[in-house]
Image (cartoon, rainbow, N blue to C red; front, side, top):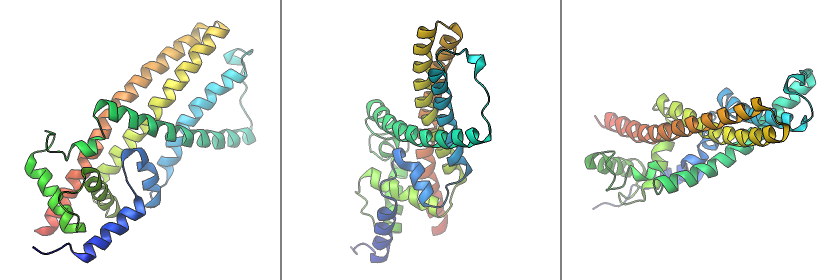
Length: 245
């Protein structure tokens, strides 16, 4: 039996060193390293950040009715945008930690790991074995490597070669839903506390609506996180299989 292809092994080491583990908690930073940071990443941070910053304005203006908040001038608009982006980045980091907790308690690990385990029924055994074989042929990776390692390489391959737009589409959707899940939970809690202190039912209603939106984002986050992981494996499988024809 011949040993691993040294060129392929070198490629594997370069990819893995360059992007590290690309588990879902750090996918957005991975996109930035591939030159894909753009309008989506800006708004994905600004929208959650603006939500929390807007609620924060209500807290600061605790003695003023909601309708009395004046529109800021151009300078304050720029400052608001900047602060919203910074807060959004912090929320993204917090939501990544929440994602890790949710996945470990719900699945015992990330879906990207489970889908390559022998006991997981999502994909048939031949498909999982073929993924390992194709990864071995492409990168010199031992077929018995850890599922997360195999998935990380598949993800890097799919993104760097622009194999599938669906991968990035699912990734954008689920990371945004994850960020908004945390954002609306925090906003809901602040609004309810503020409603209690100010005695305004409208704030209590907004707080409850925010919690309802948080649950909807939670369900969307779970759905598209799974779709993202499945699409990475399918795209890698199809691309490598077609190249072999």
